[in-house]
Length: 233
Figure (cartoon, rainbow, N blue to C red):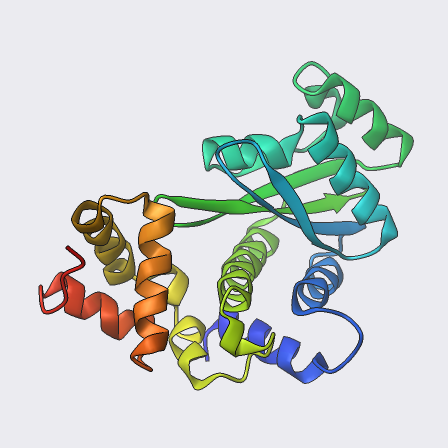
C-alpha cells in the first residue's frame, strides 16, 4: 500500500467519532509531523475561502486569522501554487506584518503552507505550524507531501453526495494508489475543459459526475477521454 493509502486507512480506522474526516486528517498530521497545529482550507480564485478543518482550537484561530487578514503563507501558497516555508518569523515580518505578529504572540516558530492541487486546479492549502524554527527535514517533508495528497483525496471525495463522508467506497482504490498524481486525470481534465468550454475546476467536476453516474472510477473515465472514446462536446 502506498503512503497515501496508509494515511487514508488510518483515517478509516478512526472514523465513527464526532470528528470529520478532514479534522481527523489534521490531527493525524499534527501528531506525525510533530506540529503544534495543522489547518486545512479551501480557496477560490475570486478570493473566497473557507476553513474546512483544524487540529485544535489554536489551529482554528491561526487559520481564521490568516483568511480574515488575507495575508500569510496559506494565502500565498494558494495564489502561487507553491510550497511556502516560513522557517523563522523574522523572514515573514515584511511579507505579512500583521499575521507574523500574531504568530509570534502564539509561540509559533515556523509555518509550512502546502498548496492543494490537481494538475492546474488549485483547491486550497494545508498549513503546518511548529513551535521551533527551522526547515522540515527530508523525511518530514516527504511525509507532509503524502498528507497533502491524502487531503486532496478527502476533499474531492466529500464533494460526492453518495460518499456520505465515508472512505470505504471501493472507487477510492484509485485514490489510494496515487489518484492525485495520475497523469491521465490531468490530461483528461484539460481535454474536457476545451471540449465543454469550461474552467479546469468545472472540467474536473464533469469528469467526476460522469464517473459516478456510470459507476466507474474517474481514472477509467479519464482514459476513455484521452482515447477519445468519450467526448464532452
